[in-house]
Length: 173
Image (cartoon, rainbow, N blue to C red; front, side, top):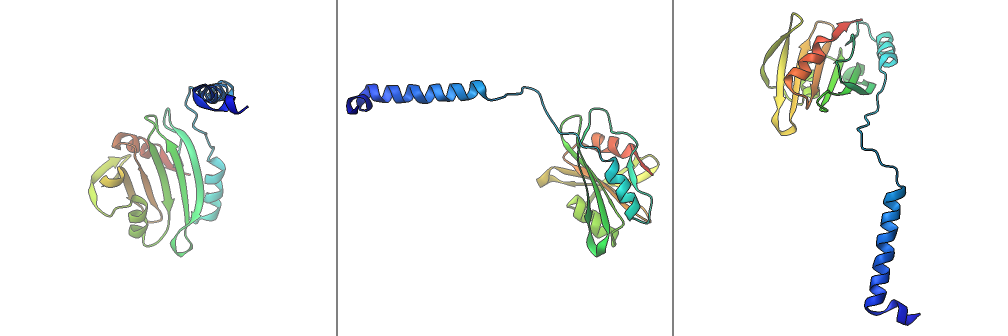
């Protein structure tokens, strides 16, 4: 036995066994060549959020073409305010998130969600003026709309046209 495990031939046999085990592992492991982004339905979350807040809830009428809704949640914001977040993988496979809350002060909420308080311009979307913000170190773009009863934020690594596309789908329910 000692002769079998020593020297060049012992090393060669051990190497062969390791390579064979790795090849067998790769052969039996399931592999997928197509993208899989889990799709989550957010309609129940939006309905539940609507029952818990005193204002009309904003939500997409329909998801933009090629977008995959992949996260949604209701969380507590400052001063007990409710916060609704809907996350997406965009058609270009970037991240976009729609967030809304009646948290006061609205500017603090918007600054926290956008990770910036610096405006880089405005955008006219469906007759409303959205504030544009950009944080370069995170490659994060944000659109902010402060309404009297609720603050809407669309943010993520998606480019401006994609964020605008999501904003155009929003309507109060």
